[in-house]
Length: 335
Image 1: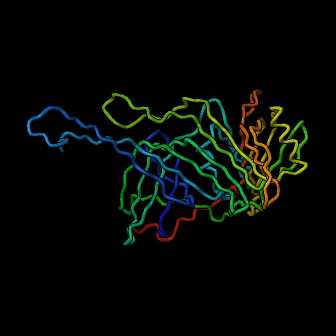
Image 2: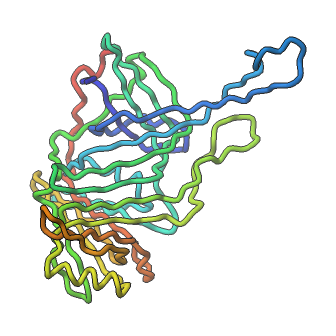
């Protein structure tokens, strides 16, 4: 394991212009990969054996990557800001309340993502990806451990350096704890009545509907900023036991009812919390399933819909302390 590897993102003032500061995240994997294509010219030529070495032009196609993290009760605001269209924040009594919402138009900035990959000898090489735009995300909670968030990004270009002074030091919260399943609760509202949903696994998946291949005949292979070209798709699922209380969910699925869901997370850091609100969801299946070696189970996939009254299809309220002194990693100035 590369103990000094790191990943962080920083908001860009302009698409493709590198940020000067980054927020550090404790990523689970390194999936940031550059893409190159070749323009090859082949024609009749005496003595041709195969494609000539001087007839292949390499083209910078940008690339893709993702950040997968355990959600912390402090310091997750930038990653959430990357995937939601609208972000507002207020500060009161030592806490900042962030509100993230879906909207018709996206106000999310583009990002610079710096992935530091140490060599076997310990040299830190920073790969700086610019023009990063979130395209998909998955929020999930189950009985195995921490609540997680995975965000997929498209990026315009990448450069790398091992020069110490050019490597940005990721800023981490001074103290933070992971949200885990023991402090996570799912609530369902049906017919105006709220009731806890005994879910052993819960997931939300989003495709933000962005067109990422915006290249033109303009003297450069670099693409323009992605724009929304399709209706975003928000889906989810819940799994649990088939109980008397779960039977109405199957009946709701058959009737095509529109329900409301909420997921509440209580942080271990005093005063912290996170709440996901889905005011309009429609169940899309399935039938309960009996088993010879376990209790009867029921999986409840659903589609997240636009409520139609001007309120967001999805809202996340994230409360964290307002003072989070930066804690640069030890050895951050070595190279």
